Image (cartoon, rainbow, N blue to C red; front, side, top):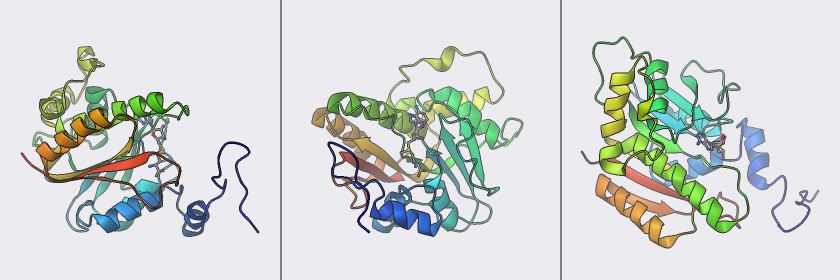
Length: 254
Ligand SMILES: C[S@@+](CC[C@H](N)C(=O)[O-])C[C@H]1O[C@@H](n2cnc3c(N)ncnc32)[C@H](O)[C@@H]1O
């Protein structure tokens, strides 16, 4: 039977090939295949399957990227999934997946929640970084207006880079949540907001909706300055008519 099609203005099948494959393989969304394609192209993107790796998955709901990370992760690893959704990873029953409800554009507040989720509040041995890899598939609902969608996407790209690289390298948080009342885990979070939560030699993959070549060039340059390898890629698993791309940085320089 031919796939159902959307009603007007698009030729995208409602239930496409990747959505069917995702369902068959038990993934919560077709997006799983995008991360699988990224991992295939960039084999060092995710941490190796040994040790105690930690991955931050931004804009994680419903959780198919987290599922892919968990498939490849050692039994002692942890994925922190951040989303605006209340319990973003509620459908993943795996003790290694921890849900954090937060607006990722609020850098320090999000880091406070990550520190708390990792139970580092009262840990005297403070880590110099939290994560081996920072992923972001975050996107606000698209409006169809090219410029608006591209602007919103860039705001999320910059937020992901601030969380990974810190204000020192990725610019200040325009939302100024530094004025918040002191919270537990505050000191470590403030430090990480400055220097970034990604460890040296760690990696990032971040979704971008293209729309402003000049701004995007500046973001790619930021990636080049901070990683030994920086790439901007379109994926065959993205919808054909989408302006979605991914920025990949491998090997954080520090
Ligand atoms: C395309 S979905 C992510 C799909 C996910 N990677 C998966 O594989 O299941 C985009 C997500 O970004 C989230 N998002 C958008 N803006 C956000 C923000 N400011 N902070 C946190 N999450 C955000 C949305 O709530 C949505 O769940």
